[in-house]
View 1: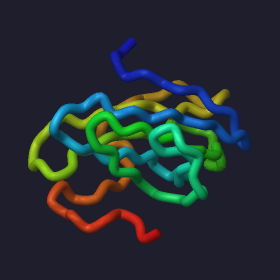
View 2: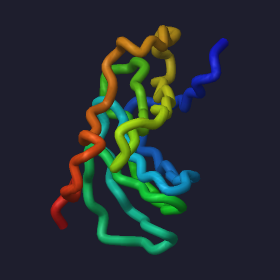
View 3: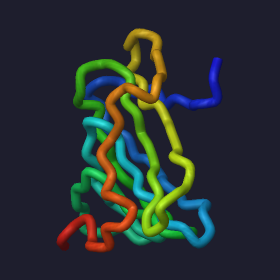
Length: 126
């Protein structure tokens, strides 16, 4: 057993993830390989939904996103990467489809795309 946690999902279902940044003085970017997210709530306020491939989250921010399990059953990395600093640890979480084969969680598997740490333009246009 390893320290990387898994969230099990069923194909075809939509899930709400509540994402809370527990960081200090550092922003992170959250993404799930092969899955877009629909942002539906920011800081406790319901908003006009918008879709993103990845989400910038600054210290203490809170978001709710919807993800739909619409890929081939398998194991998909959800990761965080640092923003605006050139070094920091990466966070890992496994999104495991129900009845998918056991995960071989290696870091050479397909990882989500994140903006480079020094790109300061917004990741979306509203």
